Length: 599
Image 1: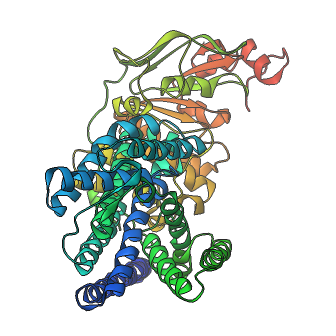
Image 2: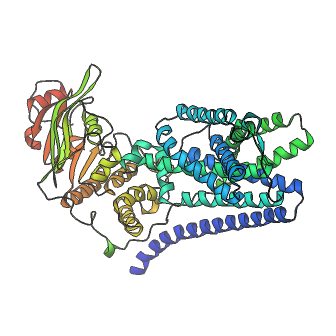
Image 3: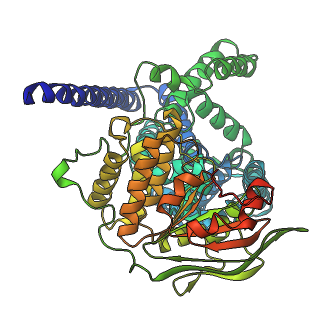
């Protein structure tokens, strides 16, 4: 009997392992092919003629620019029209270092990169507060300001430009730019396999949900902005080395920005190999068209790119991904197996003393213009207890959660976690302090897998990488999502998607867990699984506040009930008392009949 029982289990585990092995083989072959291409390009740089070396230089220049733009716009989701500004800053800084201070070109390039990063740090802190078209236009304005400053200053030739001493040969600059292009690819590969890459992809998908997971989104965005600026400045410094001349028109050329954006879109935005494919293919096609049709080159190239983008919205990479190639590998996947005897508690240690007040809302008020969403609402949560917050639609329940978690600000009253006042704290700081939440409508991270969705907050709450991996693997088992570890959250059925969101909140090991209608539409089996998770969390001292419309689903486990109606607390107490309260019955049924609420 045991052999018959274990054979299906072995079959189930073998299939994922085979798929993982095949994926790794594909990745190794891709990197091997990349190495061969780089070696061939190095041969061109070393032994090719001047024209071939110059073509290699310009192609690699756009590869670096494409990866620079892809980091801030593809991975972070902040579309920029002004990264060419850092290209110009790098060009002018390198030229100044060489002309005024007689630095070696390699030191001048390093100085240009450092100068761009130092400038990008305060600029990013300010500019990344803008979103959408406002950020794009703001960056475009910054690049124009850079051009105006370069035109008006006499430090490096002013508007007329100035020759820069040429050191070395075209082949040498081509080889240096090839090395920078390889470095840009490796940097992006590292990003996509790192916690920083996870944070960038998460905030690109849903910045609010990322903050609720304890992610400092501002720091992550500024880091990506600085990396992007450094790469663009590096390209600009080597460009000046190659051409031997510096002027505002070439250093702050917006045509470079447009070409770079088109290359990334053509190859595949937000991917590892898309910028490389786009830059190489478009550069080679553009060079061939210029040789055959110099007058019509831009028209033909623009038409080809337009057709390709319409035909392949995901870029060239999407064609390969249909056959299992060029797909992003999940970070630190697959999750390690978890044996039954290795199952750890939900929380490694108690997060509170049972019965101790942990969260207090005192007379909280929130107004939106002339509408009062919450009017002097008070609520207390104790460690190891479950508080149910019920009430009709529009009663202010989700508004209360938004105030507690820092996504909104109250007009009056106070909210405390223990003795800490939560006034004006950023949402990620509140999450790290011990308050985790779900959302009324699921807010998944489509770019991440189910495994990475749990790993993201686990890294915030854990002291080490190994601890985070172990905790995320344990949660996958608890949620019965082990077989879907590499699935996109969007592909999961609604029930499993809700489990994943609850798991994401629990990975923070919160002192207070806020659940917003998580049991709506759940089957009895799914509700039992949620009850089991909540009982385990409560046993560890976690306080749970649950908004719920499915009253029979929450009442069996609730210790205390608070009822809101039109932003006001109309009843509080034990579940059996509250459900027979005439005011509660009227709020739910709209009648004065004294019937217990059962809806």
